Length: 378
Image 1: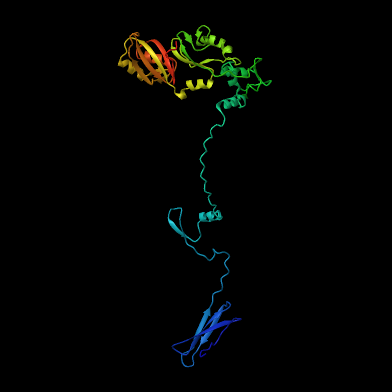
Image 2 (image 1 turned 30 degrees about the vertical axis):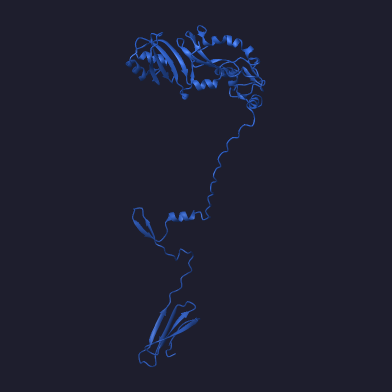
């Protein structure tokens, strides 16, 4: 090697040399790569063929950096965020919101959603395997026939459902030897011993009865007033012969479905079925009722328009569903109107006709819902 290092100050160092020849002179430089860190190196180089003064090199190495404690100490990532003033700004640390979301992130594998299995269509009910007579025998003898106590008392003819509840609250009804004060208690007359005022209730309840009555004038529908004739008095002969026609069955407690005033005649239904009566009278079912009103005088279009517009009854404006002037008949000199209503308020038809300036001679109800008064019923 033509060049020589004049001075070298190092302690306990090992060098690996690699020669690179120079194209301008015979001098060669040696690049040293230390295997350890060292603070300072001084060296000089000279050439024998050149009279120029030797070149000195002064190499200084920076001290080694300490090992980073975490990966974020040496990794610089610029974060562009929006400050409180709304302007974009550059910061060296990640936003606090991002760190919070990373800390609370769920790193587990996402669960696969189970595919919903298509529901199988409901199978049609199989046809009955027993005859109608066999099913009736099962329902009458083996099927659970428990009912509310108040309903059983009303069906047995003890009293109305409201009066039966008063008897229960008064402690006058016992079930299997214990006083019962709850009308909603489920009982079965065929299995439970029920006593009312010391009298035992029959095991069999009377059958359901449905009667269409052509009520004449002069009869009221309630049975509480003794000074007036009640429509229920027309059934005295029917009920007196009940034992001969239906041996072994108790007499039903009959009542009228709805009411007709004392001066109105026509169709009224009598039964002992409370659910059936509720379906006919409750306004939510919106059953229409048809009346034939015989009026005095001549009926014109203005009268029909006035009836159609309706009137106020009991603070409620009532309008009829339809109004029709019937053709005159030879044996009936007075005009007749067919009026259909659905609310059935007290004296509603009479108030509609009176508001139109007409006077009613006779009023008759001929239809309730789908039940029409038979023509041949006296």
